[in-house]
Image (cartoon, rainbow, N blue to C red; front, side):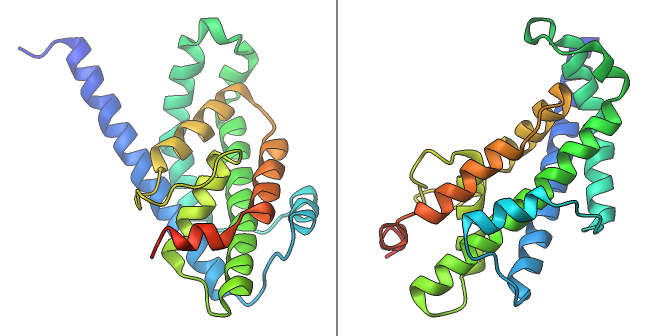
Length: 199
């Protein structure tokens, strides 16, 4: 007989899988649009200026809203259960707003970072950027800007992206500083070394 705990665990797994699929679909479409565009972010400074500006453009609204709808219940659960993380209780009541804000900020950050990564690859190779490499490098830099990207595993760490957005949505944290570090890391990245990993 299935216990209540087992039913909850199964539900949480489904929700998490749905979240990861939704995030993957959003991320894939977003970077595809970046690569199809002729516009590029050419420096970390330019990227930071773009992120500092108000951006009212609705980017992939349907996909963002689907991700928010899946994320809000999970963030509420995190906030209610996070007694040791000093979650401001007022945020529990405004989870939808904070989660939407965090995810939309994350979408902008990934778009700008991906554009810079594509520009640097195009400048280095003299050819159109490889979409799979742009997507992998962008996520690696976004999630771990202090580490050299590891291309030995070609899968995308989408679960880590979801966890980051969920946690920041629960805590209501500003993501601008972390995005700036990722842009700096993209500008410093030794692409010759990165490309050598793929040979």
